[in-house]
Structure formats: structure tokens, C-alpha cells
Image (cartoon, rainbow, N blue to C red):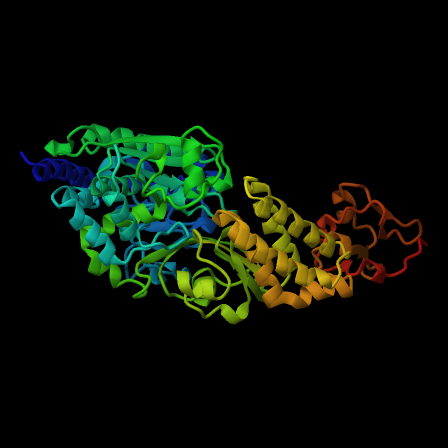
Length: 634
């Protein structure tokens, strides 16, 4: 029996199991149980559904699944109730779960108030409601996220899982690499280097052995695409890893995952175990001449270990610092041997290409940048979460059409794209296409796909300081330019946000940034100044206001603002602000019984603004602080 027949037997069993689930006459409840779901309470939701099914003697099954990208709506629940199309519900916690069981499963009321929409078109039920992601997204990596049980390999196999790997086993190694080259796939880790070329270089490099490494060391603030893929569809990543290993002639594969991702680590370990059990990993797989060993290595969480050579140093038990290139890992990497390193998203796109061909992939996105990109959109948007789009879509389409625009109806100010070393782009760039080259030309970068959207209340000087503080702390310290230079940049920004800056600081920031970019060894240092350079380029007026007027136009910089209470609006007898102040800086006047803030005690936390009833709107913020109205206690 050849490996095609052996796989066919496994697939037939998997399809049978899958069909028994999706075509069941029983109630099937799918609950998003990845990290975002668990953080929102999905564990309790799952338990409640199970208890309720038992309590009312309902024939049904609760299936924990991964994240489908609608993170704002977690815990997400999809209910397959006989007689109805599969319906998706948002923010289903314990109370809502009880309502759904009684109202929908027992009484037949679909509960439109909780519904996102129908998974399949149905004239009687809303297909998309007001959530346009169902129409606008193009999913080839996340297409079955939130649909399959990530801990059940049969679910993946029933959805064409591992068919790309089986196809690869019947091809010559160089032919597989040619397919990847022809597809135009570029590395999704940030650099955008042609994946097929990287594979070809590694395959042609000589050595005693070869290793393939999956870089799952995702550390950008606000980015969680890789984590979600590993938690929601681990076998897709594993299949891409196996195809890559076979193509370059590697017999050792390593998944490098940061230890802060415990669910992803556990999911990938389970996937490896199950894949071994089914025969996809091991010696002479399905009777072929290909053998592979796959292991998981947990990184300690250093951001710099996302850089290839630093990652390899960490794997070898050394301090995670980058090394000079060339030689590149493809030529001399792990233990001095040829090593292929690809990002989670890159490897997860490989099965689609092998199954459907290079041309099918090239028809998605742009000619110079085909395929899709996955973004984690966070910050001041109505519907934050993960979005998978064809390359070349605009920022405006992503932020406004798909993610619902700016939260609370406020004005858009900027989007920071590309992780902590990315650039901050203003409204004028909302219509540029999202791809490696266009973003680089605007002064930003694709990065791994992290995107932070900011409304009009954001201070761009403070934003630049926040991201630089992160990269400065994450610098490994090997390069003087990065170690000392980023520290100096941060100190200058700190002076400016305190109202102690000088106009010469702006030119000094530019000059020092240029030196750091030219003198740093790895991508962390070379891109660390990007937030500063783009905020000066597009928001220089805010720097000038901080320096000349000693004023923060956005009222964010604590040293340049003061809180006070408008006595004409303050309601006598309302103690909302008094009760929330952590430093007891608010006191009641003797005669009018209204509130005043003691400026010496105030730490400017802003809690008093949040709790002041909107009908009074008495707590005000002023910048600079010396504009504070003179108030005498009556």
C-alpha cells in the first residue's frame, strides 16, 4: 500500500467522524476557547452549557474551538440546532448561556439580541447583520479557525488537512521549492523575503544535517496572530513545517514558542503527539524515505529572540543576541549547519499553496505581493480582533469598513503599524495599499501584522515614547548604538513630555536616529527609531507645542496637565469623584459642599473624569497646568 492509499484510509475515517458531527441531529454548541475566549470567560461558558444540557436532558455536545478573529465578541458561541442554520452569538457568558438554552434550544427563539449572524445563507435569518467581516475577509490561513476542535486531528484531516504534505511526498524536492517560488509567497514575519528563494538557498547549502525552525516568538505589543493560529489550527502550521522539512532535506524540526503562550505550547505539543500517532511524523513516513523529528522549545520571552540569529543562540543554550550576517542561517545556522527559519504565518500558508497550486495563491492580492495578510487590529476601534485580507487592501477599508471605525464616534488620528518598531501614519495615508513596499515607502513597515489604531485624544509624542521605552528595554545590549542610543532617545522624549525640551531636541532626535539605524546590527536597533521619525515627520506640531508652549494638545502627558473641578457644574452632594480618588486629593468645601482637587496630592490618574456623571461633566483637564483657574475654598 502506497502513502496515497494510507492517507486515504485516514481521511475517510476523519470525514466520517466530521460528517457525524456537522450533520448530526443533536444540538452542537461550538465555544471559542483560545486565549481571548478564556480571558472573556469561555471556560465558565462551556461548563454552563454542559450543565444545562444535562439538567434539561437535551441531546447535545459542546465543542471547544479556537478563535475566528472576532475577539471583541468573545466568548463567541455557534449553535447548530436542528431545524435552524448554524447561528453565531457574541459575548456569551454564564447568564447568556442559560438564556440561549432555555429560549433557543427549548423554546425555539433564536435570540436575535445576542446574534452576530448565520454562518450559512438563509432567507429567514441575517447572514451578515452589521458585521461585514463575513463578506470582506479572504481567509486561507484562518479559514477553519473557530470551526474545528484544535485538539482533534480528525477535524483537520476532514478539511483537506495534510493533503498538501501527502502531495509533496510524491514530488521531487526541487519541484516543491519551484512551486513556492512561483507562488510569490514572501515571509510574513516582517522582512518580506521571498520564501521559495530562502528554501532554495537552504536546500542547496551543504552540511552534516539540516534543521527547520518555526519562529513563534511573537512579542510585539498588541500582536497575537501567531498565538491564535497555534491555538486554533495547530496542524496547519505543523503541515507547513513538514512540507518545508521535506523540501530542504531536514530531519529535525523545532517549534520555537515563547513560554508566555502556555495554551499555544500545549496545543502544539498535542498536535505533534497526534500527528506521530497517525503516522505523519516519525521514521520513513508512510513507507517513504522521509523521516522527521519535531520538538517544541520554549523561549524565555526576549523580544530580540524574534531575530533569526538571536533565536538560534537561544536554542543553543547561549544568550539570545544577534550575530553578524553573512553567513545567514540558511548557510550556517543551528549548530553551525544549514537552517531554515520561517514565521508561523508563512508556514501556515504553505498547505494552501501545495493543495491549490502557485497560480491560485498568486491570484490573491498584488502581483508583487500575493496572498493574504493577517492583522491584529487593536486600540480605538469598535471591533478589535484578527482580520485576514488580501494584500493590497487599504488601511481605510480595514479600519473603517471591517473594524467599524473609531470607537465612540471620535476622529481618527493615526495608526501605528508594524509592531513597536513600526511607523505612525496619519489620515493622509489611509488609502495606501497594505503591502511590504508601500508601507516601507511611507516610513512604516508591515512587520508581523500588529496594528494599533489611535483616536484624536492620543498624544503622538507620548506614543513615540511608549514604543521606544519598549524597544529600549528589549535591546540585548550587544550594539553600543542600540544600547546607548535608544536610551538617549528615550531621555530626550522624556524631557519633552515633561515640558523641559528645547527646539534643538527635534533635530537631535533625527540625527541620533539616523546613527542608530546605520550602526545597529539587527532589525531591533535598525527600526527602533521609526515611531520617532514618523511622528516628527507627520506630527511635528505636537513636538513644538510640548517644547515652546509647554503644552500637551491631547492632554495626555501628566507633567503638562492638571485636573480641576468646575464649581459651577459640580453637583452638591455627589461624591463620585471623592470615592474613587486613590490619593484622597479631592475634598469637600465647607460652605457650598462642592469638590476641589488638592494639586499637591493629585497623581493625575484620571479616575475622577471617568466617574463624574455625564450630566454634570464637572471635572476638567487643562494644559499647561499654569492655566488652572484660581479657586479659593469658601
